[in-house]
Amino acid sequence: MRTAIIILATAMACSAEPRYIGTASSAGSFWVDSAGVSNHATIFENSVVETESAAVKLQIGGGVRILLDAHSRAQVEADRLMLERGRAQMQGGIDYRIEARGMRISPGKSQSRAIVSIGVSGAVEVAALGGVVRVANAEGVMVANVAAGRAVELRLGETTEAAVLTGCIVRAGGGYTLRDEASAVTVELRGTDVAYLVGKRVHVSGEIAPAQRALAPADEVVRAKAIQILGSSCSEAAGTAAMTESRARMAPQPDSTGTGASNDASDAGPAGDTSAGSTAGSTGTAGTAGTAGAAGSASAGIGVSTAVIAGVAVAAAAGTVAAVVATQHHKAPISPGR
Image (cartoon, rainbow, N blue to C red; front, side, top):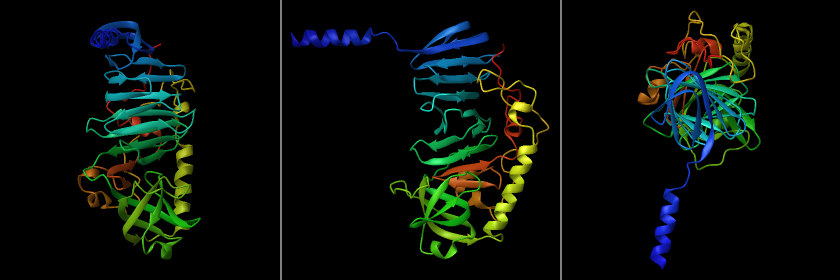
């Protein structure tokens, strides 16, 4: 009798219906689980969607909207999209995320919008169209906070604890924090010389301590092994940052490039202006040249405005999101082809 019950339970599990999680639509044809589809399809848990010459709009659950760009491939689950190739744009769903090459990209706010792409070199590029976008590694260590209109390029390294940061040391409660200039991640800085360098702009080499709880408002704890004081003071660095932000505000933003972008993720993303110029790292920060080498292969090929957090090399891209999109393989904005 017991054997019969076990066999019956196994048969019921095998015959269970796949879990429905959403829909897919496109102006052209695409593939779902290796089956050719035109215009519309139903998406189930673990479905693999592959696009051809047209983008596909995914509606997941009640509020998550994703545009999967042309020539892209991703596996779709109820709580995440695993990007295997190409580019995806996400809006809605504070608990939803995109995963790409070991990176976890999630909205920091309900109105956040993100573009995630896998470059031809294998680097993961993350741009924020609206709201803050947060990036963590596979272990959940925060490696980047991307503000609206900004972008970063990320590469995995071999050492998972390495940290190379640049910023100003400030006193916070009973400890000391530093906000990295490239990744915008705030860390609690620990070390014997940290207390003597409050108010100084420094270049820090050390390691992440993931088991240690960080002092608010820090994201992570970093144990400093070497600290170099840079030429400019914190006040001078703040002035430079303010000028940079002013120039960025005057530059074309995603909603003013003539693409009809709006708060709806189904609209086009930032314009692909091929004259936008610079890729990641062209806004080099004083004193950070050679930072990449300190972390070995993790930062090979990334510009001088680079941080390393938990072994992930994070390069801050110059200018607005449009500048980053212009350097990607697909230079046109993502469009659902309406």
